[in-house]
Image (cartoon, rainbow, N blue to C red; front, side, top):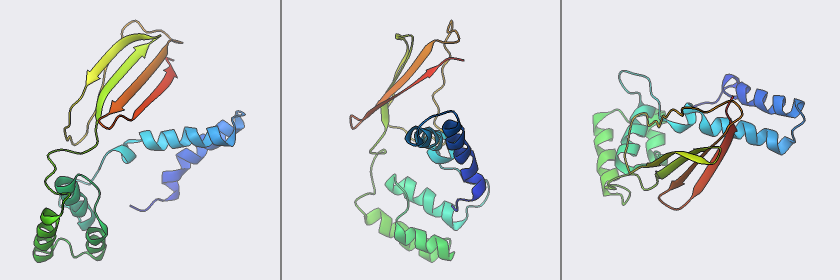
Length: 170
């Protein structure tokens, strides 16, 4: 996917707004980066409905068989428009099935625990397992929260990495 100015403009605006409000350059960039990393276009694989083009075919094939992005060979064939050819596609499937990345029963990296607190009181504790979904989403409602209350979301993945994010309820 080619990035154009319209893709970048909202994040440049975030940086500029933070700088204008007196934030440091580093914290301004962090705010924009957080926006990029949380955007659905970054988090989810999205493709146009209908017949798959070669790029979409490469992505689907790679994520289905390897649970990761396409390699250079798939990307090259997709860029040249040759991947949809039945002979080429069949050869690529054979090659990919022989690769050690093939045959994984589920993605090797996934979030397994999500917690949420409001003012340090637990409101959600979800244990998640390895699963593949077209549009994964965790949604919940908190009753009784008021503007100014502190919401903290934290997660841990199956490799032990952890992260947390805080926000004030508006």
